[in-house]
Each structure stands twice: as C-alpha cells, then as structure tokens.
Image (cartoon, rainbow, N blue to C red; front, side):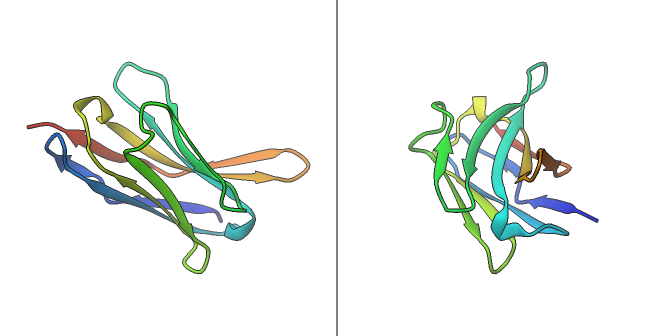
Length: 118
C-alpha cells in the first residue's frame, strides 16, 4: 500500500518560514520523481516544485528564490523549505510521487494547510 504523509503546515505571518515534509512508504522512493503542488480556495491545483530521482529541481516562477525542494532517499522523505512567505502562498499543499513505468503513475498525499496571515 502506497502512503504519502505530509506534515509541517500551519499558520505563519508574512515573511515567515515553514518546512513541509512528506514521508513515503510502499514505493521505491529513490526511483520516484517527487513534487509539491498546492491548491488555493477556488483555484486549480498548481505545481510548486519538483525534484527528479537524479536530484534535478524545477520551480514555479512564483516561488523561485524563496522555496527549496530537497529529498533524502535514506529517509524516503521529500522536503519543501518555504521562506519569505506571502499571503498568496496560502493553500493546501500536496505531496506527489511520480513513477515512470510503462505508464505514468501518480500518488498523492492528503495535503497540509499553509496559511500566511498576520
């Protein structure tokens, strides 16, 4: 059974920082591309950042220079360090694991709420 469990969300004032974690089980983590997505109320889910199995990263323009994605294959965990948070970063953040087999298979976590407000 595949599980992705996010943690680290919460309420933070503008300019603050949070670190999200996503611990996985049931997949070969080191072979998986990992990502963070977010969905704000009334909006579609959007990509925040991804990291390939080889460690290459990609970021949405809106978070470049503020967010950092990283992975620890020994712990089967992916992180999202979020600095200089803005109110527009408020959303539910979802962890994604993407396996490239014969087809693409996506797994999702349950999401963690991040609220940026004074």
